[in-house]
Structures are given as structure tokens and as C-alpha cells.
Image (tube, rainbow, N blue to C red; front, side, top):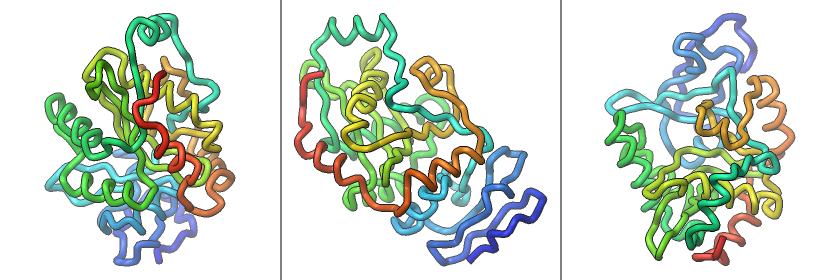
Length: 247
């Protein structure tokens, strides 16, 4: 187990074989900002453990697995989602439906393909396999938006306790990913989800109501909202019922 005492200086940790090896978030590097550890694996046990502590993997093949814990965290409180006038008009103008976990593998594949077309993807085959396994275990979830019977957009992420960790989103039709987030924020209260982690800020997320908190506050939120890293059973239950539901 990695020594969790503060070293007073940034350092990069090489993870051991133990899936419970935990770096100290306060020791993350400042350049590149937020990089905390390297190595380990993408086993479900390690992913669940490190997500519950605020870490997430982000790397590109053939690089080793890199684990991050940024100083500034972009988050959304579901009740603060900003529904713009234009987005409201788009929802009313078209016939949209949504589903949860109906096409998880298709969602992650679309997220990977769209990023590969733009700047190269970090969603490798290993990432796809790891999160698909998390989906089977009830931890990873996809929210799908449908237009005229066709998959139009959505996103996927990891849920545990009262937290949701968003990973990636895609749109094949204008506003589809925004609508997916709007739908998820609407059902979040019934799932007990209090906070959505968006990892790194963007103008897109800020326009939807995201805000920035520092690492110390984020870690406090994790302790409050994930007393134990269990699956969100309410979200799983809603997902079984929400198959092409009208928005």
C-alpha cells in the first residue's frame, strides 16, 4: 500500500499490484497538473477503489496507464443544470426519447470514434473492455438519446453512492449530448445523486451549469457522498425501466 502521508512535494507514484494502492492526492504533479500515479491495471476492483478516492485513468496507447486527480475539479450539481432557451426549443421541436444502459457498448464506441476523428482517442480497447465490465457489475452506466428511432447521442460514466463520475459524451445530432445531461440531471434526485464529476472544465460544460471546486472540497464531497463504494441501486432500477422513454 502506498504511503498516504503527505510528502510536502509533488511526486509520481508507481502503483503496486495491490488494487487498493492509493496515492496521496496532495502529492500530485503540477506539470502536468494533476498527474498522480502511473501503472497498475484497469481491473474493476482498482477502478472502483480509485474512483471512490477521486482518481481517474487518462492515457493514450502505447503509454502506460496514467492516473489523475486535478487541483481544480469541474462538477455539476444536478439541480443547478442550466436549461437554455435554445435547448428548450430543441427539445420541444423534435421527438426525443431516452434510455439507460440499453446500448452501453455502442455509446462508448461512439465516444471513442468521435475523439479519434478529432484529436486521437484515449478510449482504447482496454478502456472499452474495462468499463464494459463495470457496466455488467452495475457501476458504469450509459444514458442514450434517440431521435426518430436512431441513437443520436449520450454519455457514459461511473456511479457509486451519491456520486456520478462522467467520462465522455457524444452527439450525432445537434444538442443530443446536452439533452442527455439534462435528462440525467432530471432523474438524479430520484437516484440520490447529489454531484456529477465532469473532471476538467470546458466552455460547453460551464454553459450547462457546471462550476469549479478545488481538490480539498472535492475530496470532502467524496467522503460525504460515498461512505462505501456500492452501486447505485436506484439508478440500476430506473435503467431497467427507462427504455426509449419520452423526454
